[in-house]
Amino acid sequence: PRNVITSVGNHYSMNIKESYNFMINKNKILVQDKWGGDNFGISEVLGSWSDHYKSWKNMNFAPILNIKYEDLINDTKKSLIEIINFLQRFTEIKIDNEKISKTVESCNFENLRKMEKNEGFFEAAYSEKLNKKVNFFHLGKKNNWKNLLDQEMEKKIREAFHYEMKELKYI
Image (cartoon, rainbow, N blue to C red):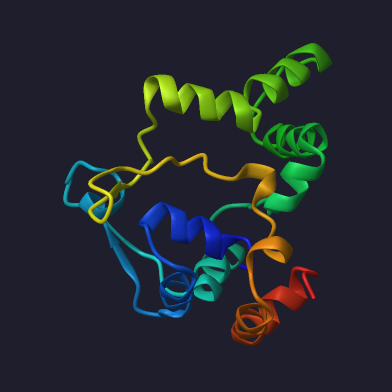
């Protein structure tokens, strides 16, 4: 959640305090026109960061694989192989090392950022404050809470999400 807060802030054009309040809001509901641009009448119950995490973790109707953002950043290829191995339990996937390497390269942050700049990106949110769409691919590896959060905000996040952060080995 310490890295999520800056992403939330960018995506919804909020400062850190507003982003924190967004993340602790147990009643948070996203309405399609506020996060995708087109209004299809779709809403998503998000809840707090903790509620959202637990909704995925406690899913009982389907197997899940939890991949941390940090793992994707630190060893993308290893994470992709882990995902493929997981999916191979349910469907036949034929993929070789060359395809894995090409996938990792084509989906790296800078390439995705360039694609968004040239072609746009559906999940980029429209900011009423800025009167334009906000880049979805914002900081990438530079999104490091140690460099972006003051000690007071880091402490508030740690206290608010202590149980989940401990479970995920963030603390």
